[in-house]
Length: 275
Image (cartoon, rainbow, N blue to C red; front, side, top):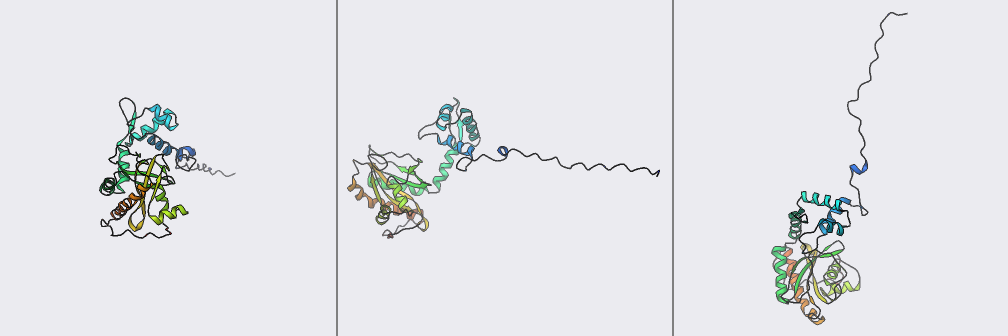
């Protein structure tokens, strides 16, 4: 037998980092909703959209009812929105929209040069026709009123700015569809004429006549229209006012395209128009 001392076993090296623990999926990624969006963002937008035009504030219970969410969920969302200035809680506990919400609207309108171009043009159109004038833009599958100037008449049609309205009902939406390339004889007729009028199509007793507005490189920006009660604007009156609306739309198109001098004649519209 050998009398040599045996070497002690070498210990296994200690791990240099702690083993990672996988977090549950719900903690690492936001949950998607049915449409593929983020549920928390969708709910936050629901809270902001719960306020109707003219409402300065709402209690938590009413916000909860309108959103279809539990009060604790709405409270958590409102407090989160308040951190970024999109909501403000009043001393009585009610909630109102914050200054950040107003800044969003102002930035959106700035993209259309509302102050310098749209509002003055609509005021001129109102003065020329005696009716309320508005500018509509397409947002997805709806149209919204971006700017509106009320007419001098005591009896007039009131449109809510920012409200989503159908594209296929009412002359402002029909014009937007026509000059977006919508197929069909009805839209081809609108493209040929360069305008469209309707009576009671979207709202009973309301008459409108609209024309398209373009920007740079004849990109469709939206439609300009005048509106009023059908009792004051029968078909023959709408036809008579159509050229005034077209002239305003043409002037707006050149102003939005950066050229304040409109041509002596409106450009000829092709029979078949494609975007």
